Image (cartoon, rainbow, N blue to C red; front, side, top):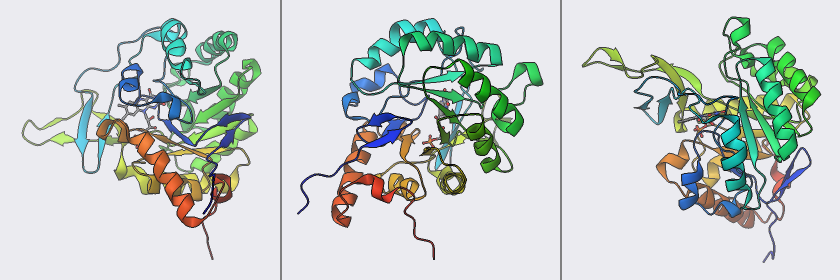
Length: 304
Ligand SMILES: Cc1cc2nc3c(=O)[nH]c(=O)nc-3n(C[C@H](O)[C@H](O)[C@H](O)COP(=O)(O)O)c2cc1C
């Protein structure tokens, strides 16, 4: 009988009591009514931009087979609100808070990071899936060159370790991960949503107001897992895995593929207390396998 199982992991010098945290945009202050936030590995609130923004026209979500499409469009109350309301609200739980930053230009990313430096959030996650409006509107994270440039610029001002959150809507995600690593990112997280579409055949119209949107949930899990595995082979920095995780077994798959920590997104909408369940299922798995430290299985997939 093993006495203690350690779920502690380390991301860029920040110790997490366990590897489970929410994925940005799926967990807000209202979630704290259903989840004991002090039990989480970290807290990742919704991405914010420099100024408040309204987001996209409705409908913004549509259900799909084993998943959902969303085109929320980073509706948020801006940096000021994050600093004065969201951050203090979550910091009281005593677990690391990761600021998820979205911006449409290098300047906005820099301005936000300089303000975060003053508050010292534990980590910053750069959401590089936003369009770079100064460079024709293609997402930063869809080009290795733009990813390199934005991470390098962010790194030059940030006093806080950076996680770069990668977009899966690319030909070879390992190229983008390597670009982010060589620009100095301290960790990568992947994946953001896959661009998709759904049509209502009765009205013959797209189901989303924005026509296309991001696919998430169990439907994307095998693709996300494959990408995490590929990236983990190539980079030396920690990888945070996500995409369709809804159970301890799903989380373990990502960890075996090379993820040091995992994020849970759409799963929170299905069952708001799912992360606590996932944490205890990870612990049960390790106990059954007679493994005392989760770090022993990171990247442990056996390939013969
Ligand atoms: C409704 C909704 C809103 C989201 N908002 C954000 C966001 O603000 N920033 C971000 O980086 N990702 C956002 N995402 C993407 C998730 O963080 C995550 O990368 C994606 O949903 C895949 O994980 P999942 O399959 O566990 O949901 C959002 C996803 C959903 C479903």
